[in-house]
Image (tube, rainbow, N blue to C red; front, top):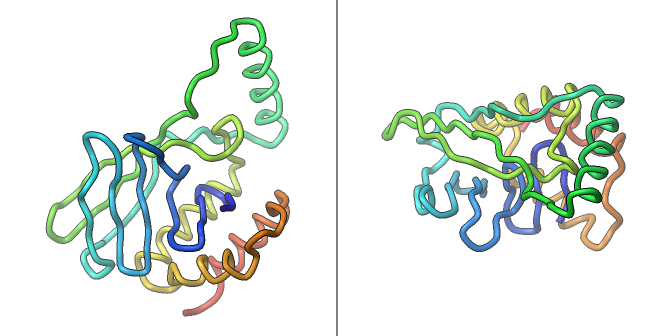
Length: 170
């Protein structure tokens, strides 16, 4: 698995946020459509032809310097208190033709749950392109399969991937 922007990419599907385990919340994107997962929101799914929009809210966005400072503070707090929390959650809003607007929660996959402004902007653009069919989910899955077992991409490599997926034509 690999994290790129707001996405956790496996060989079979793409998650908005972290891949959920157990009853944790999440949103899964496949070549066939979108599915909400987790206790209280799981089991709902739509084909891409039913989706009108996907957007995210409540994502922690900070400059690279502020992100580093926030992560250092959080680490120190955990060391002092011994109390580590789950990753922060954010809201994924799925607008469908049949069910209207559906809100789901997802857990952040990024360290500290914080994304840079550029990561956030490119991730939102990619969500729009996925819905519009300009970037198929299979492009992300193919990249992951081609890099299976490779080291996780660096920050610059992740941004380059997001730029590629938000500018190429299907």
